[in-house]
Length: 226
Image (cartoon, rainbow, N blue to C red):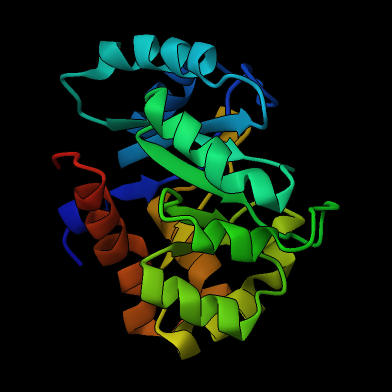
């Protein structure tokens, strides 16, 4: 694989504005050092007004307008009662979120039951993070709706990666590998992300798609230029 094709795409990272330990500037700078082409900051939101958080992230993103890393400013909707996910996603998008992801039903935390289905049902949600014991019917719906499913590089969330990979592949759903980084040292190199995908049981072609083709397609969908 040529060097340009091995540029990293990561759609899930956090800053000290929520539960991370670094600034967005620190994260994007570190991403550049790790050959990231695209790095999204997706700090947590629930039922509060997302605009102050998004305004702050957009202000930092402007410093990277000339690249080389493409910044995405987004949110991770977390621990919201499933019936409110659609409204929170719409509010985040209206407030300037370029990317909307949802904190899926990981086994590592007590996520409200029904979160996975509510996220996939919501057309404003781009990606379902660490969906835990993903139901095959939800994976099929993700395929139908174009919702991307995540294999997680984060300890705890990653314990169901093999299940998610198997169910997503069977349904034909799109997969990406994300870091869920909470500090600069959590960001994954291309090689480490490849290991996460292979460790989850993805064959060669699906690994390549999860690391390059699917991320590129998602970035185009979000209206960003590569």
